[in-house]
Length: 159
Image (cartoon, rainbow, N blue to C red; front, side, top):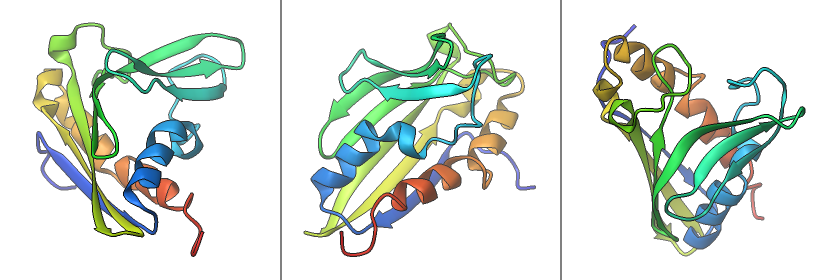
């Protein structure tokens, strides 16, 4: 296990124009977010990414319950989006914004048909005692690497 850091960075390249890479990330977030990453008491029916500053990312359960686990802090298509990570070291929703970290996702066109997606999850130490478990969780293969791998799979070769 590597030593926890207050910043976790991951990146992936997708075969898609920058505008499409951004749109798929925000409009189809629920298509690549692992359904087992669930703070609800019911299975997730959908994950919604509200595409505006002040919006939320939330899961809606099959029973109609909702879990708002992120706030959209910046929405600048097609270049970047920033959202809070309102999940505590106990993997519960954190309601105090001072105890949350943030995730910035940048989209950089490498060619007209290829986009590099850079994800930076920062200020993890703001989660307070136990923040290292949040860092370890999002850095682990089942964290952001899994999200990005599933995201990239939404861009079939030559599509």
